[in-house]
Length: 266
Image (tube, rainbow, N blue to C red; front, side, top):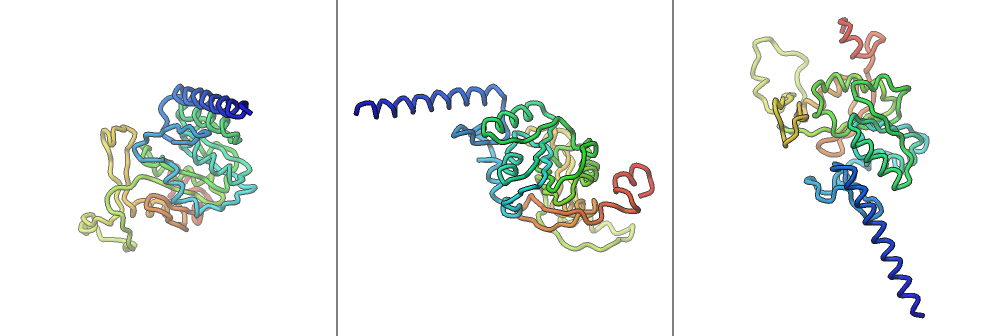
């Protein structure tokens, strides 16, 4: 019966070899921002945010149906593919992940193939999402907003793709409180701009957290104001940085808000 421990040794050696090869391939794909568990091998085990984005997903997963059978999903700025893969695991019929970074797209493709999950991946900017065919039941706009030089334009453009729900997440700084503000204020009222809770966006001229693509960082009131201004109704706020919305008044005078703005009549 000596073959039994020998078999275990061979199995363990094979697993170790496979894990080693997997780790090497993960390393070859460059630095990962998404920490995914690929058959026991993490892609970003030393992430400065911890087990990210799993820790973020655990906070928002409850507001997304566990059964997404038949649903279509657009994951904007999909990065290494964590959210795309999670949505597909819930049974989504189609998941399209888009990003402008080839490194992230290659990582997402490798992760999906390694886990045996079928997702679509495409190089596409959030500013060009209006050119994608059709609309989606769920649009994930996670961790992208503050990296954009023209964030509100991107949001107004993206709402054209939302048939069902928009899951919006951004870094926020400043006040985390929100309150009701008046519909209008007189020209000489400057006091409101001294209020910490007034909607505000902080502009980063050079770099924040060693990242020169961190351009605009809103406070909570600014996020919620912009979502409403883009014609979205906030339905849930599961954690401090995430909002779930649905289209309410994204069309005015028979046109999308962005089109009206670009043509002048808004």
